[in-house]
Image (tube, rainbow, N blue to C red; front, side, top):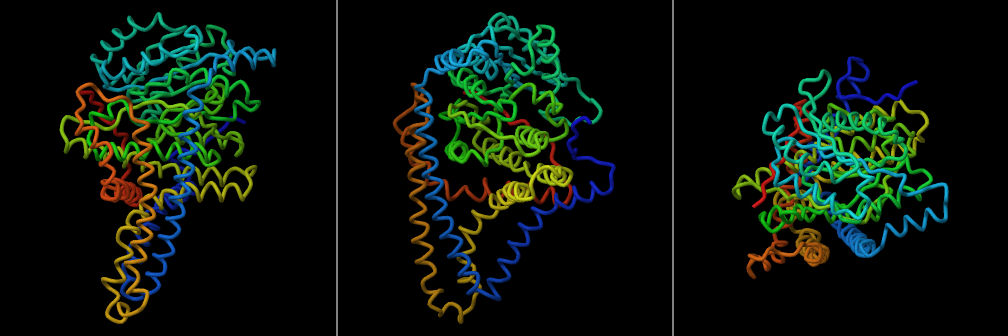
Length: 510
C-alpha cells in the first residue's frame, strides 16, 4: 500500500473537523491565557503574583540551561571546522571495504523566484569552492515559470558560467497553476527533485547513493560541509532514516542590515546552535539534507504548505513510524539577514518573515491527524512530540509578554488590600533579581555574537563595530513586537481561518 500523508485540504468530514479543531487550538489557548491573566489580576492578584514568581524562576533556570547548551554547541562548531572530513571518509572506506565514499553523490536543489544574479552567484560559488569532488555533485537551480523572461535570462547566464563546474547542472522551471498546488517553495523543489531523479536514473546512479540538500537561494555553505555530511551519512547504518541539519548563520549581509534585525537573526542562530546539542528534539529548519531514496519514497515535499522545511521531517517521521531522526551537522551555512532599501521597510519585512516562520503552526493539525492514523508509534512518543510542537508555539507567543507585563498586573489592578501584602511589597524586588540574573544569558549571547561575525567590510567604522556590542540592549525591547506578536498574529489568523500565502523575503545586497 503506497504511503499517504494528510493534506491541508480534505473532503472527508471527520478529517476536516479534526483539522479545524486543532487549527484553532493554539489561538484559543493563547488568547484564553492572556484574557484570563488580566481578569485574575483583578480577582486573584495573589495567585497571579505567585504564578509569575514561579514562572520567572523557571525561565531563569532555563536561560542558564540554554546558555550552557549554546556554549557546548559553539565549541563543537570550532572543533568540527578543524577536522579533515575527506580523510575521515577515506579512512572509513578502508575499514569497511563494502562502502566507497566516492560512490556517493550530492544533489543540491536551490529554489529561486525573482532573486538577482548578485544573490545566486555567491551561493553557486560556495558550492564550487567545496572540498568535496565536484564530479560527485549535481546542482539544480529551480526557477518558477511565473517569474517570467527575467528568470529565463538569469538561468541562461548562470548555466553558461557554472554548468561545466559540476557532474551535473540542471535548470528547471516549475509550471504555474498545477492543480492541487499552492504558490509555495515545496511545489517548486518537488518539481526540481523529480527532474533530478530522471537525470540520475539516466546516469544509472542509485537513489540510495544520493544525498539531497535543499538550500535557500542565498545559502553559502561551509567549504567542508559536503565532506562532513558524506562522512556522517556513510557511517550511519540507518542513514536513510535521518535528516542532516547544518547550523544557519545570517551572516551574508549582517554588517549592512540594522541592529534590530541583527539581534533577531543572531538570536535565531543561537537557538539552532543550542538545539544542535539537544538533538533528540530537532526538526529540520531552512537549509538541510537527507537521503534522496527517502525523499522519493515519501513523494517529495508537500505542495500546499508554507513550512516545507519542517513538514518534510514529519512526513519522513510518519513514513518510518516514528523512527526518523535529525543528525546535527556542526558546520555553518550562511544566509541573508532581512534587508530592504530603507530602515522602515526592513523592519516591516522582518516582521513578515517572523510571521512566516510562526506559520509553522500549520504543521500541528497535520501532525496530529497523522498520529491518529498511525498505530505503530507508541502513545508516549506521540504525546511527547505533539506537546513539543504545540507547547513550543504557545511559549513563543506568551513568554515575552508574561515576563514583561504579567508581573506588574497584580500591582496595577490588585487593589489596596493586595498592595499591602508582603508579596506585593517584595514582588518588584524579586522580579528585579530574577531578571538581573537572566541578563547573564544576554551577556553570553553578546560575546558569542562577536565570535560568529564575519570580518567587517573595509568601510566599517569604529562606531559600527561598537554598535555590534551595544545593540543587544534592544533584545528585551523587540522581544514582544518582533517575537511574540508575529506568533500571536499567525495563531489568530489560523483561528479565524485566514490562511497565509507564501511570502518571499526580499533580498538586497548593498
